[in-house]
Amino acid sequence: MSERPPQDTAAGHWVSYRPEIRVLDCTIRDGGLMNDHQFGDETVRAVYRACVDSGIDYMEIGYVNSRRQFPPGQFGPWKHCVESDIRRIVGDNDTALKLSAMADAEKSDYREDILPRSESVVDLIRVATYIHQIPLALDMIKDAHDKGYETSLNLMALSTVPDGELHEALALAAESEADVVCIVDSFGALYGEQIDGYVKTFQSYTAGNGKEVGMHAHNNRQLAFANTVQATVKGANRLDASMAGLGRGAGNCPLELLLSFLHNPKFRLRPVLHCIQHHIEPMREALKWGFDYPYMLTGVLNQHPRAGMAFNESADRGDIIKFYDSLEDPD
Image 1 (cartoon, rainbow, N blue to C red):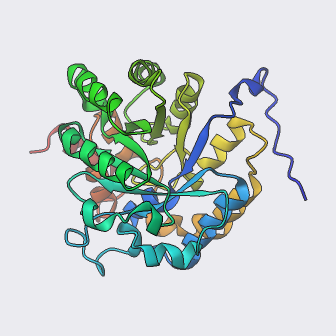
Image 2: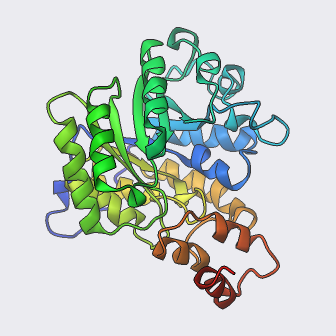
Image 3: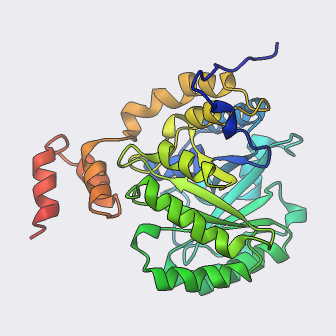
């Protein structure tokens, strides 16, 4: 049975349709930051099946980070993405869905742990980097490219990067093997006007060399979807989202909202909603992701949400005035 997506009756809704847009689901990878990547196989397999059935382009199944820095046992398998674990979920992945894994600069034994593409079911390696790690990140991109993978350079905490350093990094990225250069609003601090500027800046370095601009938004100010829409309107073609917004702290752009905005007939909403109902929402009480006041405050102050995450795990959870005062006067 073919599915007719819900119709957006807003005038001009069809202008969001652009066939070159690719959507990446990061539910398991980013959501794993809320449970030390301890998702069971049933959940990971359900997300994979929903991505296949809904026509999503990429599923990011986890990190390929160091087993020395992040010991198995303390962290679940989706922190390391060992090939046997991935194949236990997807087999040979004989579907149109592509698989992605993320490697953090300074946290990945990438030369040893990222196999040649011919030996892996993973298609895309994304390298997450802070601005001071750019030289290492570019070496990681080259390593993944030389092994046969698609590659993406994800510039984290962009809201803290001085303009001069950003332009230097983008000039290097433009000469690198990266297929995508991704805007990452790690702290959920950015507004639409700033997104406009970042997309324009990134495009000035990617135009004409075959690279795409990506967008990964966090929801500290309840702007993850709006900022992803804004990036899309301005020409970003690689978009991150997660089911029910599941992700670190305040979470990400909700996949179900993004699909309804894009109006591409290849996307089907029902499989995503089914997965959310039966597998994602039942975890909400335990994982406690999504917008709340501590995450809002770290976004307002342009800070990493780790303080909010720690506060929400403490006995003081709910005392937002106490958290606000601790940020205003940390001593």
